[in-house]
Image (cartoon, rainbow, N blue to C red; front, side, top):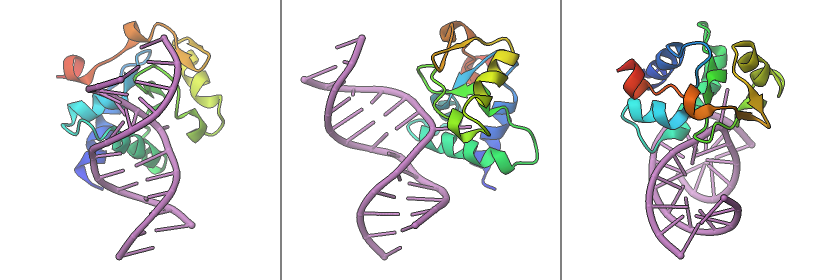
Amino acid sequence: MSDFYQNVFEVVRQIPAGRVTSYGAIARYLGTAGSSRMVGWAMNLSHHQEIYVPAHRVVNRNGLLTGKIHFGSPDQMQELLENEGIMVEDDQVVDFKTLFWDPMTELR
DNA sequence: ACGTTGACCTATA
DNA sequence: GTATAGGCCAACG
């Protein structure tokens, strides 16, 4: 396992419940800005990770749940988010700008 | 080995 | 505001 994926999982695990972040934000935090697709690929690997990775708290820049189909069922991601108090409407995180958690500023 | 794909982002028009 | 283009780089067939 490369350090990149390890760092991604670690950052994602640090996301507080009820907050969300974006792939690009994580990519920038890891110094691999522009390669945000790799972050998405890392999420793909997060499923066979032994540690739990809250991938549902990671959405794209528009707050759109683009990766919901990679969960068990397409509605799983939305349910998990709503279970944490995040309202999802039309596959979009409501009040995304406020709930946004930037590892660059929040995690330092 | 090569071409295509993709849980994305930024820039330009 | 939407539309299109380019870039990114690992995995898959």
